[in-house]
Length: 493
Image (tube, rainbow, N blue to C red; front, side):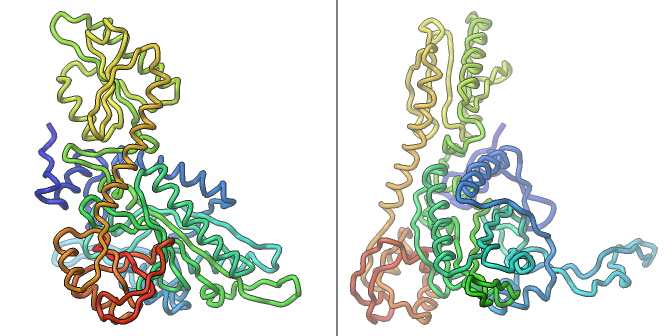
């Protein structure tokens, strides 16, 4: 029997962990800071991969794979980059172990004779090794652009971890490209940001802000970092994806040059962009409730579950036959459907279990439904019920799933808009930040001093300078200096 889920209003962090573990999304690993992604969670990630992979390929990118291990000297070639990751890197120093005896006990230690000539960094991100390879492959402008994506795992040594949101090892994709001009690279970075935003809204049902990071918050080694920012139900922001215009920084570090049409040698322009399994956590926090997961139909591993209901003298064989027919018809229509015909569990237990797993649509079929030649559909987010004739199941269920998808996005957008506040004074900023959180639209002068001060005193950061935010002359909420526009602040994960 599943344990009680801690209500969101009682303890948000505990609620999140309860949902992730009890919905069998992930579990804690024996390796501190790492997680085991269970089949239900991995199936969701696979669906996300499948959609994103198609979107990447539609924009001309190809998949490749690069080594997990990066020579330590590669990171040192780009000073800003190595500074940004130095505290998170795991290092391989030896190639084998040996057993030694001490006080009658065997101990395993690194074999001193296997010390590596150059230590290897376990991949925290792949810019350095990928651009070293690009430098081998590019000689002429005819070799450009290079549009590469990699699905991989990443290791960043985290001190405080949380399942999916921040773990020492996680899964992600990282795109890396090389271009002949800065304009092409900038267009690429913005194109991939649009891909991420479309995926978040159209598939995850999570509304996002698109914008640019401040100098303080940009990716180490980039000219500028673009991002999509989402707001979770606890009114904290989540950076859901980033796209970086890297300029020529890495090209210069790794001698990534090409001969242009005039015959002159020049450095290439690079971009990188990525999303990770933290998007799974975003779905949990954006849509989940006190009964468990709520999954968007376009990504849900199981879109509909058929639950036959019977008791006593009900015609079990006929009910099961109709339920199996419903399952088969939905499967032929392309719906990811399950049939729960376990006879040792009550309908209520089954309902609770499938709600916990976040299945978007439940289809109940009991003796009364059988008599009427219909089923009863129940939407997971709001439990709204509606009868559907068996004869029209293939047509109506896809429509209901699209309704759920649309309603989830609308509800998430309404929550975000209701938690977006305009503030004009420092006292008002601090009060709103503590009382409700959310996105705080405030004037900001752009100075690093004010940005650092605001973060130190409130833990709120500039999430982005959102695209489309109108110019509006005002006074910085912190120092009172001139400000050309409002920006979005929030506490964040």
